[in-house]
Image (cartoon, rainbow, N blue to C red; front, side):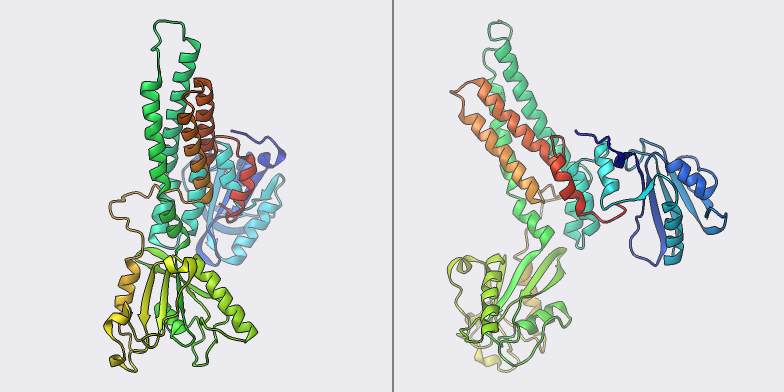
Length: 447
């Protein structure tokens, strides 16, 4: 692992870590070699490590800024692996601003950048990249499934799985090296193939089945994308509002009011669901509406599920090309106007957004399209495109190694090394400096 020894790592950093103000309590975090002297300057003395102490926090003129709990963590037993402190103070804007201003006046202290605390934890071997990305996802999690997925990553369970795979690759390479080095000796088994290639084939299968969960992880993280489509005035915006229980789209009787794609995020059975309302699908000469229809078709291509609406039998637009293969729920709308109009077979579900009829049945149908996680006590799924790409590289390299059996053990060992490197890039054990800026830029300040 590359450790940075530049000036930025010797700086002591501080930031408000607890989020929006005002709040009951605000937590200011400090990390770095000058943490002790900063706490001494503010509080007079440093409490014993890991023991919360009630202290007065004072400025240079000895005026009391606030009273709060002070915690000190001595390196390496801290989140970042450096000396750390937390000031738990009252969460008023003026109080927090006064303490942050005082910290900024202390020499060799600087305000932390986004993700800088976590970056130091990574460089000091406290957390690997999967755990850190899981931490970012845990902070961003809005649904129960997002929380469970992030928890699995941040707790290190997924890292342990990848490290177990990497160890098996290292073992296989060691066996090959032994055979190449001691081919003339009698006491080395003549062929490692029997044991290690069976395991490599098994490993390849394990990585493949793990990769199969990437689609589910994407739905958990980004939400199931449900596109509401249909001809103008079929009741698309009314359905979006009804499901969202708030007015997010203009509902009028004039055809073609939804010119853009409107979206609303909901939580359904613990999953994030993104509902997208689109312009009515029809032929039109109106330039703006034409663009709306074009965007509607683009949005349809990204959908996991299409809700196709019509307010009369025979009013369902045809989905052509790739969209025709997508799962579709055909919804008959406005049944409060004329319930007899519809033959039950003409639609999958009949609804009225005015009376609420059929909405519960529609929601049950939507739930049936969510991933089935029964039997998944833990969510060990690859949740980022970066993970999926590295896992695919590892699997392909193992494939190449298995396919080269007639070209010599040294070539096979080289492909296994490449597979191990690909796995190492996921957790950050192999050269990832170029990735770090991208990963940590997603973080909030103070994390």
